[in-house]
Length: 167
Image (cartoon, rainbow, N blue to C red; front, top):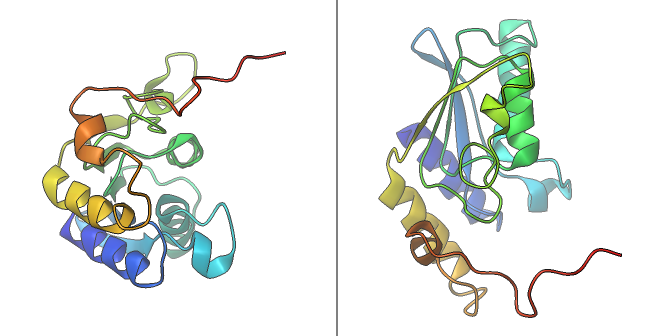
């Protein structure tokens, strides 16, 4: 997880949200990445997706059986889906993300019994360090947005004006 935090710090250095990810197979880091959405102008350049792509290339297979993905924040729906489709054995992350988390908090894509694969989850690893990094990135940019500490403590906040009504 320390390696994932290093990747998150590197992402922040180029103005990307500080999320980092590493893939470990048989106790060895086979890939690492930080968010690069701003750097690449690519909405799919999340740390998890980049790390999974690199791990697949390194292993020679899209199936990452036995692999563990370490991430500094609970994955979003896209990244949770990618982790599931890569056939990971385990997902380890720092704080939960009550706004976009898809590996327990908002959704649980990686353990949906309707799907054909299941990923074991461990969360809260180096949670405070990850949360502090996110807070230091967002507070100067969005002072009106609640910090990850507030939302992770169990409160749920909606955007001003509530949830839009569907037609």
